[in-house]
Image 1 (spheres, rainbow, N blue to C red):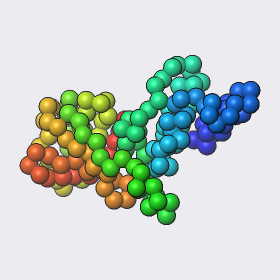
Image 2: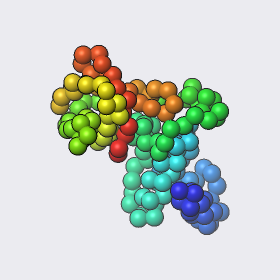
Image 3: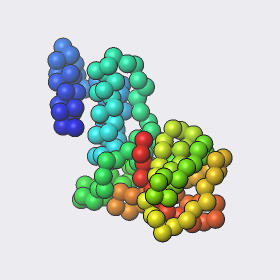
Image 4: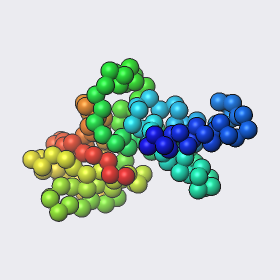
Amino acid sequence: MRSTICAALIFVTNAGGLGAAELPEPLKACAAMSRDSERLACYDRAVAAIESGAAAPAPSPEDMFGANVGTENSPEDSDNKRDELKQISGSVTATRHADDGMIVVTLDNGQVWRQQDGNVTLTIDSGDTVTVVRASLGTFRITDKRGRSARFKRLR
């Protein structure tokens, strides 16, 4: 991942002395993100798009919500919490059960979330509107129509 960021910096440095105001749009959007893991995932996507020559739109905070790689609990995260997106809502377009019985939910924005709590039985059907809420220690929660909630992890 560090090599990707280095490649982005080299790209900017070798682009004929471009200043910070002349960064490619996808990189500008990433720089505004407060959570390290979401910002890094955004940079990875943006650099991949730049390298492939694709004109990908800049990802929004909603696009990057939950895209963090692991659990975060560092001192700098507490400073970032005031600016981060706290939740997103979406309509469920598909649900399925994984081999281990966990629910996998696909939202209308294309995000796919997988249940992490095996001891909670949720009722989520296609067409339901759900809200994914940022919880403690880098986790996320989805509550079903009966008011039961479970931890979820974003797959894509």
